[in-house]
Amino acid sequence: MTEKEMQEHACKELLKKIVDSGQNYTEKMKSDLKEIIEHSKSPEEICKATLVYFSMYRWQ
Image 1 (cartoon, rainbow, N blue to C red):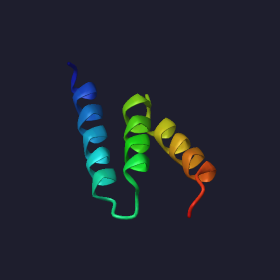
Image 2: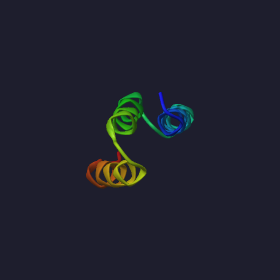
Image 3: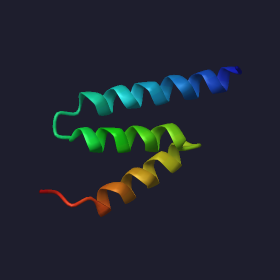
């Protein structure tokens, strides 16, 4: 594993922990957001996918 890959992995794990600690998110939202983080290939892709997710989510 290269240094860049290790940094990417560490950043993704940190983002997933932040999502897990979110008190306003349902378990489904947490799962969806962690999937977005895991499968995205760049920080820009994570941002775009997260924005699309929240724009389509119906708050109740």
